[in-house]
Amino acid sequence: MSDFLNTYKIPIRAVVESSKVIMEIYQRDFKRIQKEDGSPVTEADLESSKIINQYLSKTGIPVTGEELEKAEFKERASWTRSWCVDPLDGTKEFIRKNGEFVVNIALIENGCPVFGVIASPVNQKIIAGNQESGAFEFSFEDVDDMTKWRKLPNLKPVESPVNVISSRSHFSGNILRLVEDIQQKYGPIETAKMGSALKFFELVNERANVYPRFAPTMEWDIAAGQAIYEAIGGKIIDVHTGKPLIYNKKDLRNPHFVAFNGNMDVSVSSLQTP
Image (cartoon, rainbow, N blue to C red; front, side, top):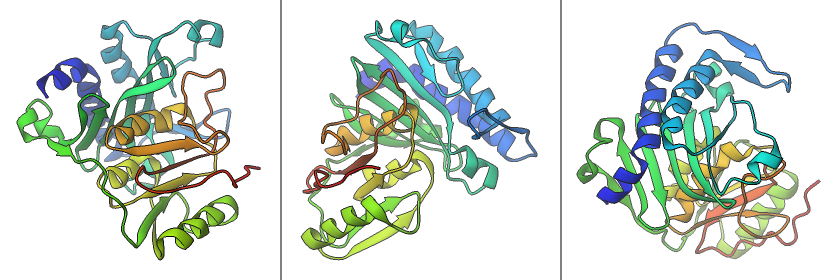
């Protein structure tokens, strides 16, 4: 276990320090602006990005981040390793002050997320993991003491009711068809609504079993969650291909996807995205 902390101390420390600044800004009035694509950004996004970039620059590994200038694909295509960063995932939730925002950092190797860490600034909790070591949950105060970390067990077979978590309270279209298929196979379902990659805290703790996403997301929204969830038997699959999501693509937008407990039979072959 100590090897895990030694290897990933920099990104783990980065999410803690950025979370502290995020919470300082969260507890007062803060500036917000609208980006060219219409999405909001606050000083918390920018300050967090600055802190994380300072930490990750020590690794010598290039960074793709939501609030950083993106390298051209012809440059990124030569990268075998890169960091994928969302310094404040859930900016709209941050502005609403509902607590549903996180900090995401993933390490990408040859298009695959091989390590992820997600921090919840409000809850002062972190989940992190990779395939070799598995996944862990721990508090900010225990970040340097792995003896106090909780090793997350591999996902168990799902029992009814299946818990479906999403960013919306009402299902329609492809998500509704997916839910109906799950109901036919597993019986009753329960639903929950939550913003940002905070959903992965629910997924890795088996409080949720399925997370469908048929709306726009970017690589930095999901990469860390995929690395952590896969480390304990979860799957995140592209509904077009039925294969895991890939990263550092020419287009940094994600395809529509479904995240689910890998013990489940979840079929996406009949789902046609608009």
